[in-house]
Length: 436
Image (cartoon, rainbow, N blue to C red):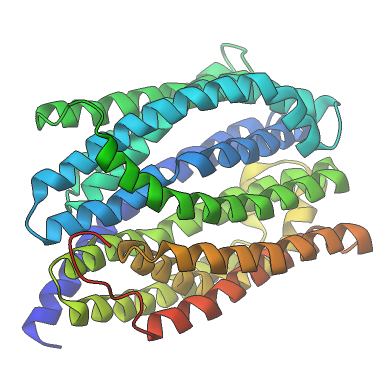
């Protein structure tokens, strides 16, 4: 390895380590929250699972303010235009606030019918889901401000501020949640209040950073229009994810309370590992975008395969840890024997998908950094609609149980793996310049 390669590898790992801390904070809080709610019983835990799936659906519309902004800001940064990169962050923040307010209105109007559809009726699980969701949706503007802030800071390779902000916000919420749920007697609703508190604090702190950089300004439609073009394909891609995940949640809910509760535990753990594997992808977004902005395709391709290799070995590590925790990990989240039994049924699929997922998430970051989001949209739709959703529906029809649902998730990963590797081997994603 040359001296240049060693320097670039250190930079990649430094960015990945920073992203790892930021990404770990939110799912760690959600895991704590799941454990807190899980000991209220299977119905509150199932309600949290349904409501969390619905919150994720709303984030389909706003997720591009993070991932789309990283690639655009990174290209400006690579071209030596840090001012333009920060301006991308300001405009992404305006978009985040506007979209977040619209989400509140939509969520409050449609909370009842949406939770009824996802829970399979209007019983106790639906009521729990609706009560949690109506409170949690109030924090959506804060959520999107945090996403936008992380996006532009990753683009300019700023690693310290996002760590401080995210840790402060989530530590506050993790400390408050069990107090609200148990001693103060708010129950499941206490969890939602703690979520909103974290989101508001996080969003305010990211706005403070923009103020310190004197970057607060008016909305600029020219910049926002470019972000929305990128966002269009990312939204469709995210929608494909959510069609699959909502199908899985709805199928699991119709199998029974124990199945949807186990699915909630599994999905929170899966999202935790996915986000941690995504730390390499985020480093790749920033470095690949900067390399292409600086007109260096050789460096961009080198980063692509290097991060894919790191993703594979990280996935192998997670597979070993998850396999070893077959009995102990589910017991951390529930005292119900029925729920633990269902978790054990999905566990082999959860373990087996990890190495492939590590490569997939790494190459996701490469292509997002390159702005090749149209291809990502297409391969995700093929995997979700052609593999994941049909297998989930078949699991319900043929009685395959929760294991069948997770076989669908594994197929979703494998289809994307094949498509992403073939795309990266080609050269159509290597487009040079400040913006794609």
